Image (cartoon, rainbow, N blue to C red; front, side, top):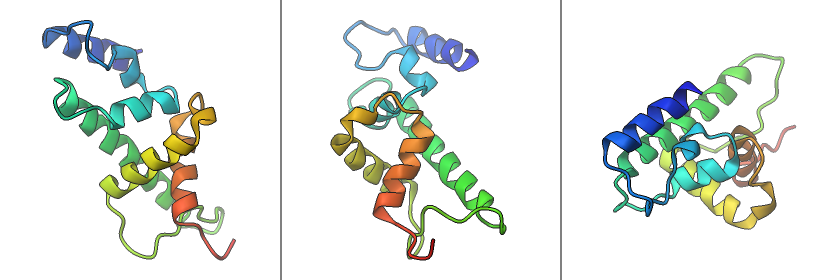
Length: 126
């Protein structure tokens, strides 16, 4: 709820018009559709910088959490890239996956980021 208030304040403070593709609710990131909209906003959209920052931060958080959970013996990794992967690469993989997975747009986005990454960088020893 607080994120919605902050996003709404940003939108109103910047002189939002009804023609904008993003809404304050998109910034809540409750669904995969929300994350897709935020991560794919066009560069000419007035909310581009805010949306891109949220997108990259969300993806980084998901991947850091995955990495921390799988450091110990309790959880096997789901995603196993062969080297370093940038946040931008994960976003590109996620958006490509989302185009082919239209039936999963109501899923919590953390699951979709992991599913997309797992499809691209599967672990061979599971």
